[in-house]
Amino acid sequence: MSTNNLEVIISQANKHITNISCLLKDIKSEILANFIHSNNKEVIIITNKATSISVLEIIEKYVKDMDNVDSEDILSPYLP
Image 1 (cartoon, one colour):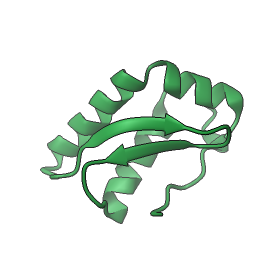
Image 2 (cartoon, one colour):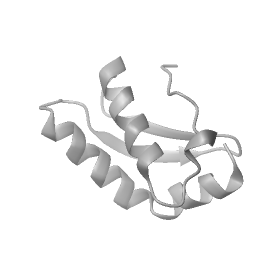
Image 3 (spheres, one colour):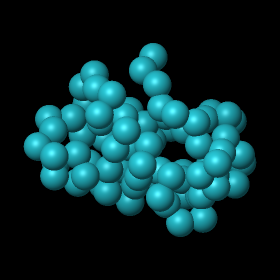
Image 4 (spheres, helix red, strand yellow):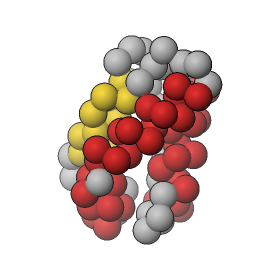
């Protein structure tokens, strides 16, 4: 992920955590986003429970739809 994308996401991490958690509540998920962490290559969104592919897709869509983020630079999320 580019440095610009990392900066955009991390600069408003609290807002993004809240928005992702609201999206997950809307689908009646018990999974909530708790924390956003970045190393120099990627953003890691930490959740309160192990997640599913459908939740990862919701998070990916949210990140790709963010303003000022180059969606071409966003790789598909994955489970560790």
